[in-house]
Structures are given as C-alpha cells and as structure tokens.
Image (cartoon, rainbow, N blue to C red; front, side, top):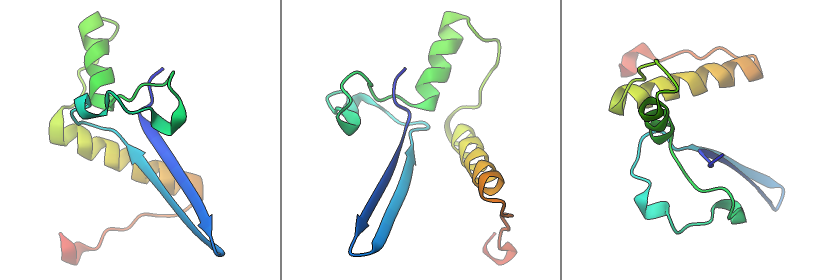
Length: 97
C-alpha cells in the first residue's frame, strides 16, 4: 500500500517537535523520485488518487468529494479524530469566520 501520510517527531535539547502530513489532493508527479522515510517499497500517493483509482476500477460505488470539498472533508475528519483520541472538544472562534 502506498504512503498517504507521514508523522514526524524530533527531540532536541529537551524540546520536542512534531508534525503530521496528509496528502489529500495534490499533484504527486514531483514526488515520484522521492523515497519517503527511506522506505523504497512505499511510493507516495494522495487520498484523491486512491479514490480515483477505486472509482476507475469499479471497486466502489461511492462518489467521493473532489478538490476543495475533499480537502475540507479530510480536515474535518482529522480534527474530529484528534478530538476523539485526546478527549478534547474543538471549538471554533466565531469572530474569525
């Protein structure tokens, strides 16, 4: 299975740094020669590309959102999952809407 996300963690001088990357909907062509995390058996892909392949192969009848709608759906799913895992509630600031 291709790699669609990555998590990075670093500790330096008693400070930790961390991050997550989720390839949702982008052109993966520039990444074709990159070996992610040194795992040459794991090519890089995106959620959009995986959904398109499933549609093209006829293995799903689900019609996924595309473009900005897919990005917004993925962001909402990540926020919801984060809140569930860490037992927190995500609250938006209405003044920034």
